[in-house]
Length: 198
Image (cartoon, rainbow, N blue to C red; front, side, top):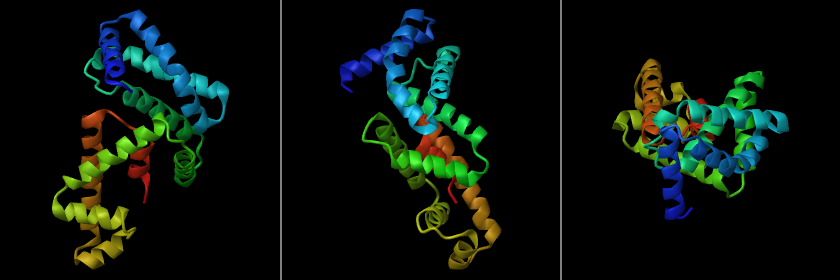
């Protein structure tokens, strides 16, 4: 997206924040066709896809007073769609494994398009967040998420208790989620997959 186009969309969000219905209409017709394949790829049901997109714009309108400062409109709107789609997947998934499989499949089959760029943006933010963790907490996180060790294995390697590992992981995940939400407001599949893996 060019700077000029980004600037125009940011301006539309400012107008929307003031209750400008025309700005809302422009955003709706601009983003709906782009959101449809993104959502439909996950739910594979045209009616449900249309309902999710309607929910996205309903949320955009009802929360319009909070969006005037959004710097990346596309990421912001796609993140809402991601969140709404995950809400739907949670309702139909029978257990956590099935849900993670759905998310993993969605990521695997995405093309190098807007949603993939958003996924990469989220992954980059996760990396930044991890880098700011205290050294021991970061080490525990990396042993868990990168090397794939369980809590017992981490405790044995570092010479600490299993409960310490568990507490440090809880603290790390809370901090990283807060970091991500404050920096971008993005809650995409990358973030969801990060928070639910292991």
